[in-house]
Length: 457
Ligand SMILES: Nc1ncnc2c1ncn2[C@@H]1O[C@H](COP(=O)(O)OP(=O)(O)O)[C@@H](O)[C@H]1O
Ligand SMILES: [Mg+2]
Image (cartoon, rainbow, N blue to C red; front, side, top):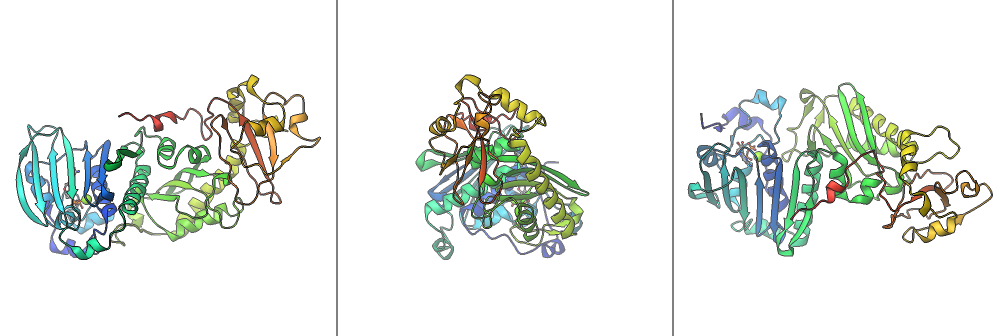
């Protein structure tokens, strides 16, 4: 059977919340990414021009469509993903309304090129302002390329509401980064053509921390500790920054429930509660949490853009996230910091010791501060008790007590990897710093950070 797409029955259509609204380039990109992921893609490449207003193209190596399906895909409420209302309760795919492609095609010039792996040729379908203007065979390697040109060319009212190219491009980048975080196993690449610039490129190596590195940058990834917890049937995993990489807002708190990035008052409150004792007031951890809850205990169909979710029991979800984060902060502090007094060194601390090149170490705080020029050190306290003075520690690592102003951030300089533990102690921050020319993987052993920056042309 070549035709797998079918029309939804009336009742099902009515049971589905209000239709998708294509508001801006980022909404188009969201739908195209969802489709590519639903099609089983492992590499997805997005290109935008003029913030996506002139052009958005999304290329995937997914399963592609037959000629019949390609034509059907641009019709309203045609989907291969949902058959009856019963399926709404157990949604496994990201899209399910069969509305996205027709909605995009109604307000742009949409070209769909697609080929199934075993097909001899591809299919090209062009729809402009909702009218089918071309359909026929085309040459193509397997997968799908959807190109959306001149968004809102026929709806001036909506066109007027678009922001500047830069703002729209920013929204696309933001969204693509978030979606990339939901799927570390898929490589996402976003290019802004007119600048010949690659905005984002994730490795797709199924390692969340590498993906965080690619999306948020090395400093954030380096400041993260793992989160893991379970409160049946809710499972939580991911990464959170320690207080030295906090932010003024929650924009980098990414909650991914069953593979979808969602906004949730409950989840936000759980993160706030858990970080309260570790972070200053008005500062928030950056985090990426994957939360898995059995599909029948969540309802995603409450928001037209699927941005919100309803949980069968908010309290369990709250508690699961709260506990997982708290123990991450508790373990993380110990994990990252080095306990000088201790015979109780963690395997990780041992590993850090090994990584530090002995000969390159400064033996006093002043020279340590000199090799860390970008560190915002307000005052270096040294006293008789300082570990620097203790002979058995000398040459191993340096600890400097720095008194930082509230909100002062410390950035690792190129030749210094700072592994820090900040604790609120009467407003004084204690930082443990490891001068090293080699890179220390700060969140977990053997993490291939480099794969995140390995940019192939
Ligand atoms: N990139 C793609 N690869 C393979 N099939 C696709 C792709 N994009 C869309 N389709 C097919 O077209 C159908 C309609 O897509 P869409 O309008 O986004 O609706 P939905 O995703 O809600 O089903 C999908 O159900 C799918 O079968
Ligand atoms: Mg879709």
